Length: 92
Image (cartoon, rainbow, N blue to C red):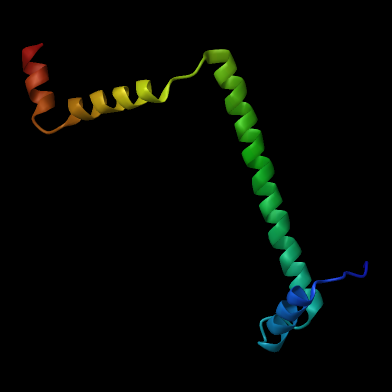
């Protein structure tokens, strides 16, 4: 395993983790830190893939302006409001 240099602050934190009993040694702290970094990088990569997919979909199908979406949601909420649905059905 390569030798790792830590800043004094990180070294102090790692040693604190060991002295509090949470970890058995600094190597365990480093492994835990690298696992968290790995998880974070996997989530970032998945998010980037999702953004790429959505961007391709928007290019292929077009996209909506925020005002259009808000108007459509507002209309749907009004249609589902208590008392509104029954009046609308009886009028039609």
